[in-house]
Length: 217
Image (tube, rainbow, N blue to C red; front, side, top):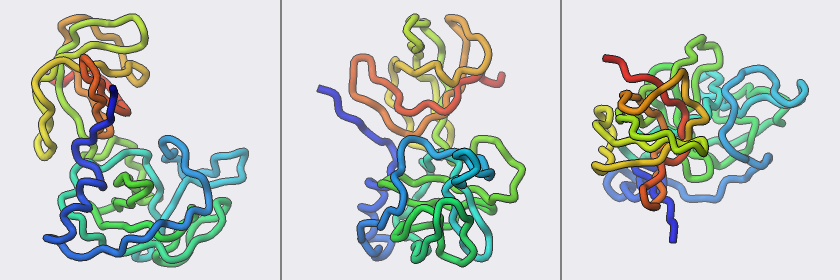
């Protein structure tokens, strides 16, 4: 039987409330259905009718990058979305979004915000930022390519996890090659960014893979 594990998720983080402070636990009121990873594009996304999910805090509009923050260390949130506008608009007031209310948020590094959406700590970035790199708080690790399985996946052997994240167990993992950049061969070292989730299969399967690229020497 498969079951999905998450190394550092908001669900686990919320268990630290007793030590870090109290958090209002209410079911967010969703004005739009959230499906899959959310786009980072600041432009309107659906035939010029809907914007990317955005939040305004401290006068700054942040847009969803689609990445999960696996480096949140405390469950205490800094605020909550209390008002919402239509998805065809951008928020214009603090603690306002264009995708619903009741979502907790936490300040991250400068230019970033973490928003708890459907139990996941989603990374939002300043809409004015020109930075398109994967944020540093997205879990990533180095591995050796053992095999191209021929079904759109690679078999890799874990070597090391980036500092600040919970290390993966030593052994082999299956990863989707959909977001592989460039060509890799057996024996190549790669860096893999993912959402922190692992499926208990044999061998274990990495969750949502954001990018795979040749590891820097």
